[in-house]
Image (tube, rainbow, N blue to C red):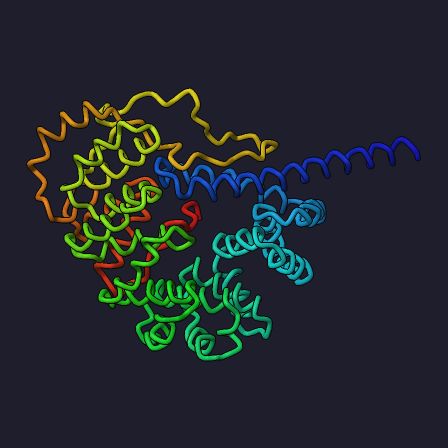
Length: 420
């Protein structure tokens, strides 16, 4: 090999390393975003900054499609969601059918990778994502139909009669992930015309179908069906958290207290009890929440519930203590796969004594038996304000509260990208 050839080979190798690193960094940044999107301290401006960093890596991969795609394709073998997301975005932006088919096939093959595949459809611009979602929905493969419905779900796009057809067809209803996601989409889009399809599944023996049928029915204004969520509220499982978030926003306060008492009969449900108390929003329980702040295992969660009811920000009002030395935060190192978090990691540690003193002075401004959200009566104006100004976990709550007030507009997706 002559000198020129060796130099050329070295340059290609160096560039290849650059693109391989770009694929790793993009996958990691997606994974980091998938965690912080539900964190109590992340604001929309924080998300926008993280998304811009992710976009920069995706743009790098697109700057040389051959090298960028080679790096993405190799990473697909890991069958991880971040890698599936990155490969799908690059493939679909390339408009290369073979690359797109490869990314979709690989993404659908893994239980974890499919999350990134769906996320890519939410990330991409409408002119790219929507035609492919339509194509997937019109295909014969049930997994493709599921992906099409999931894409519509994250984008809040209405597939029209296609959704009606899916809920009518026996072969589609036999595909559990497709059927469940279709039932969920009915509620997200507020498709009142599909209430009969929900009614068919409200009493389903399959708990996943039953849950989503009831969940969507309540979002369509059928609040009487909240009673059907009680088994999901009381029993730990994959639907308990969502059931709590919806049920205690619909139940009358007195009945909500009764459900919380039933939930509290099992000591293992203590965290769920604290969460439900915050969602219910009744200041009657504030003193009990303050008492829970003495237990390190529940202190931060109790502090979050306290804020959700009263609107008193613990850090802003200097009612928090420095974090424990054992605290673990997600780092920014793409080589470190340990990005998991303690459930309460980014919640402040409350100073229970000072909080109790403050509540003694200000608690009389709250009426027992009335629901509050972040310290104020629940109105559309206040909820829209919180959607703009609050950190992520409170934004999720505000979107659901707003949907329950207005049964016509679509449920806002507070997990969608903000830096588009």
